[in-house]
Length: 204
Image (cartoon, rainbow, N blue to C red; front, side, top):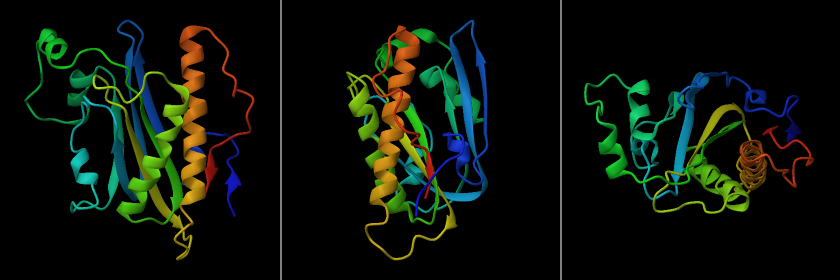
């Protein structure tokens, strides 16, 4: 049976610590979602202009089946060097402006302590995308990089029920809808209708 997380945070999920840093001067930052042990993960990209690196490895057809962390960096293309040590760092801001016009971008990570294969993790990420779609207009635009990652730590076996993923996926969408709405409210200084909804981050 699914249980409400005690803090309504992604860190309620066993073995998911988070670190982050920001620079208010440039209105950007970086967050790292760590896995206490190597975990199954997948991603769902809906934006037409994603600035990502190594996300193809998360596809169920590719060989990587466990990850140690997901790094979410601000600055689109300029944020990629934070998570990679290659020398191919973009140096001219005009290059980024020309290649990636400004768009609405939402990136998120949802996590569960359930067992999962990569295909199921990808379905969880896809279901979670319904959250931003309910809360943000426009979303999934040609200029944006909207992406949701799903992590499954595998600490709880849901059994062989093929429908076991439906409830965590629905709850993940609810969480992201409230998170996206709350973020918009904080930026715009307006209220969010679902702010008083029951906590949505749950262990499953």
